[in-house]
Structure formats: structure tokens, C-alpha cells
Length: 92
Image 1 (cartoon, rainbow, N blue to C red):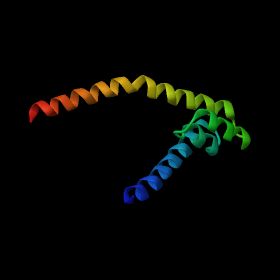
Image 2 (image 1 turned 30 degrees about the vertical axis):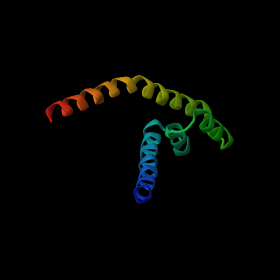
Image 3 (image 1 turned 135 degrees about the vertical axis):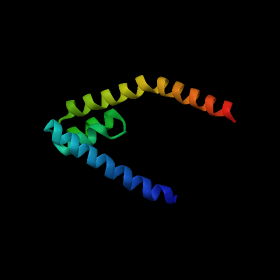
């Protein structure tokens, strides 16, 4: 419980700062970037953006890229992790 008290505010702060930086670099509104990069369901974020009057296609595009990156890098990261664990186990 105590770790969640520290982790959740830290994650919110980091997400906000990264979204603000990306918004500045891409000349897009900060709320759009927050919804574009939040790790949640794409449908919910797009609908939330539409209700708030934000750029829903941009949110959907970033969410789709985020999902594709996770899918594409999941197996290679697992294999790397598995090899690392096997090496550590072999050493001792």
C-alpha cells in the first residue's frame, strides 16, 4: 500500500511532464497528448477526447502506435529477459 502512495503520483507526474514535452514539440494541445499516451483503452480515450472537444483522430493514432509498439517489442523483450535469467541461474 505504501509503495502505491509513492508510485501513482510519480507516474502521474511523469506522464504529465512527458505529455507536455511532446505537446510542445508537436505543437498540439497538452490534454490531447495526455489522452494520446495514457495507458488505457483506445476506445475510452478517443471518446473522452471527442467529448472534451479534442482531436480524436490524433488520440486514436497515437494509441494505435502505442499498442503496435507494445505488441512488436513484447516477444523480443521476453526472449532477452529469459536469456538473462538463464545466464544468471547458470552462474550460481
